[in-house]
Image (tube, rainbow, N blue to C red; front, side, top):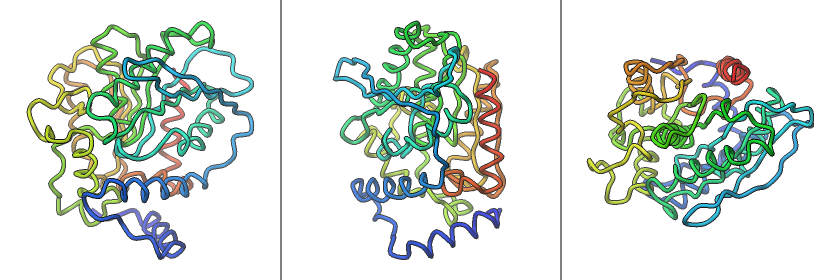
Length: 312
């Protein structure tokens, strides 16, 4: 397997523009967060402006404090479907503020309002608490659906990377609590805490490395990392009963270290009778679309996501 030549060329261009950047040392959560947040902030500057999108701040009450929410809508939105968005960052990095340009981009292109969840990250907030923040957001949106002109039967949850894992966990919670959810849109989701041993075929081209993944999962789970007690409410690959889950869309790059867990998750969803649309992009590493939104594979992936969103 080789990386898409277009991605190789663009990564070289980015590296030449920022020669002073060096990856953080393994196990250093603070350094990984600073590096990843700075990188994502820079990457999202490639996205176009969203002149028709407005944003309002809200909060969902939880037993351990409020969860900050951002409600994005286009000025001509007529109501109907809505999407809860859970930002990426390995569950330890990223914020709703950093993801503001991407969420605005989705709303600008679709006209569908998005509720962006500023969930509390690990290690300050651990284990199932992260997904509970997203679940509180789902409950809040159902309660406020009339005021916000949202059809509660047309609410979807979407997330990328660590946020994709939290979105999948929230979909499991929604099923278990009989909360309607129309679809789960999982963009290269982080699903399995046991995926910390390097695959020699994937490690050399990994943009989210096995070292970073181990650092992140350790921050999320602490001493429970890899133990049988790990809940599917934070590591969805731990789920046994896949029946009755929301219809899914999953995409992942062929060179992503999350590839196998994503393929397995899709297989288990379908095997339990759920609908699942799956895309594996050849030669693509983790976060290819954030690295280069104008790349061919990124444009293809965005077109697929928009098609699914328009069907909500």
